Image (cartoon, rainbow, N blue to C red; front, side):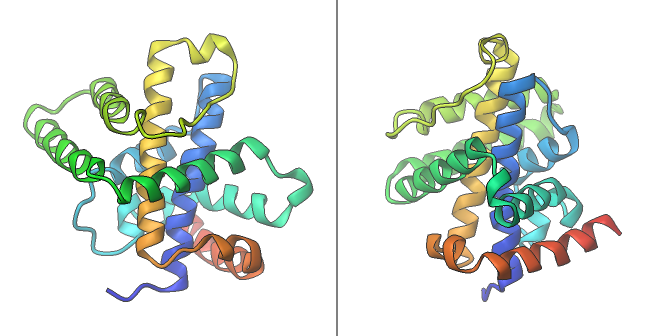
Amino acid sequence: MKYSDTDRVIALAGIYQAARLVRDIARTGQCDSGASSASINSLFEFDPKSVASVFRGEKGIAGGLRTLISQLEAPRDRDLEIAQYVIAMIHLADKLQKSAQLQRIGEELADLKKKIEEFDLPRATRVAQLEHIYQQHVSPVPPKIMVRGEPLHLQNTEHASHIRAMLLAGIRAAILWRQCGGKKRQLLFSRSRIGAIARDVLEIAEN
């Protein structure tokens, strides 16, 4: 499949959306539920019709687009935690693609999708299962992503599960971004182009 610049920006926004959700949960214990749902859903899209459909369409990635735009266009106001999570997830995605862990992750996600469809597993159970997959197959791969935030939220079992599920979704988006032809140098030298495309896609999402 031939991917466009828009496809790459949508996938990149998927990484930024996950990073923003991780930051919000770690800091406040809360996050955008719609964005979280779209990011979780992306983990079970194995044969998408388009890059946007991975996130249930442009609306599902709106939060990531807004975060991407603000991070690129307002460097003085950039949230360094989000930037660090994005870089870390891309790095881990690259390492996983070179290991046997990625296939195992895919197999376990496929099994979990079947269970969700058969038993209509509640959201908390889905998130807990995603956390388990992350701990089994991503956590052992160095370097670990160090999440900062309020101890009250980081030590909360439900919030910790949610954070790991979001990290897994971010890594999935990073793999998709690479598949679309995403390269790190684009983040340095194509900021204006990326920002313009992100604004165009966000306009579609908001209409």
